[in-house]
Image (cartoon, rainbow, N blue to C red; front, side, top):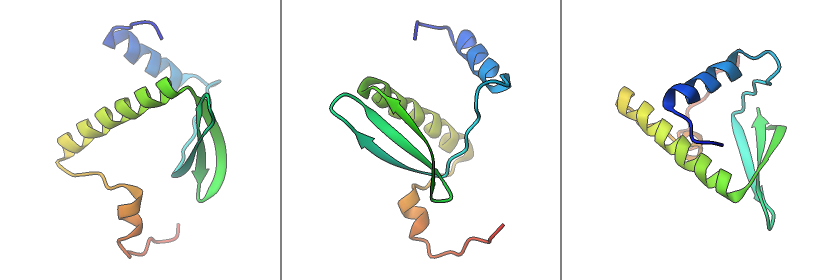
Length: 98
């Protein structure tokens, strides 16, 4: 992706969110796999496969870095750490069925 100003990047995000032709996908689980040339993310919803995203190793590493930065901002603003799935699964708390 070419170098974009923060304003241009924000506009791209807003356009994507508002576009009726770009799928909006929610996932609450995942698996990761890799080949010799790329990595893929199998998205899950309620423990059922939902879709697969393939990406280069460079894109994946950049995504990890960007997600980490975004989550750090949320944790700083809320003054609350965001637990990882292993921590959530280990709580023993029951989740209400919806």
